[in-house]
Length: 62
Image (tube, rainbow, N blue to C red; front, side, top):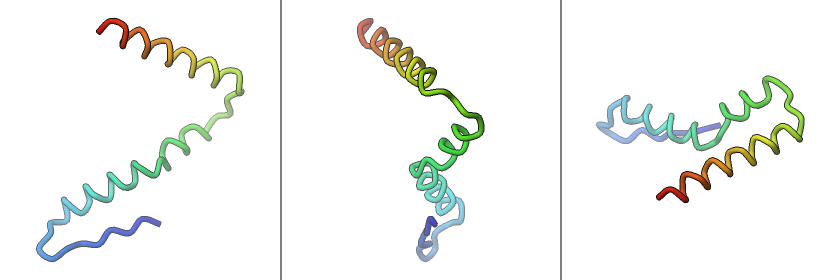
């Protein structure tokens, strides 16, 4: 459970922004989306390799 302490004279917008940032760091939404459909390990490995190759090509262009 995420707890956000609201300081005196702090706007709700700022507190909500801090909550969203903490919530995103926990990775709950990312995990929820990944669990919606089962993906075989071989496919996840393949996508990981594709991402790594893509990142490496971006770094080599610089």
